[in-house]
Image (cartoon, rainbow, N blue to C red; front, side, top):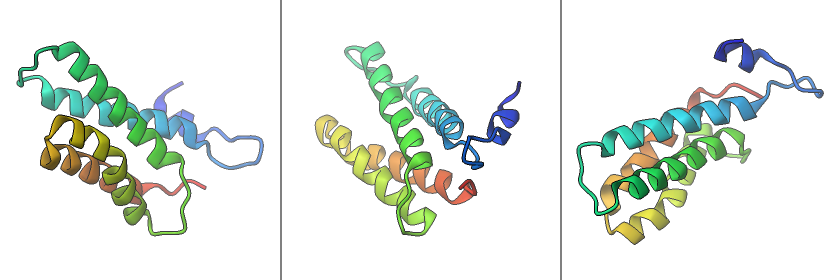
Length: 115
């Protein structure tokens, strides 16, 4: 069963499952963020990349599974910045981390048409 078939599966209520989409978006977003870190150097590169992957996976998953009464782009932008803020403060790399969270989640959210 391919990824497209997973999105067509129906839950008991008859709505398309957001869980699969959240996992897929989390994996893609996490993978992109880790790929951007490959050329950089860190004292503990493995821990840095794992932490970044988990943070971005969580963002992708949450964005796909949350329902707020706002336009999709606003939800993605707000949650992308909000959930990226702790990492940005800890690493003191505000601009790249907040930009990655805002752009990645802003772009992922508007395309969601699942109920």
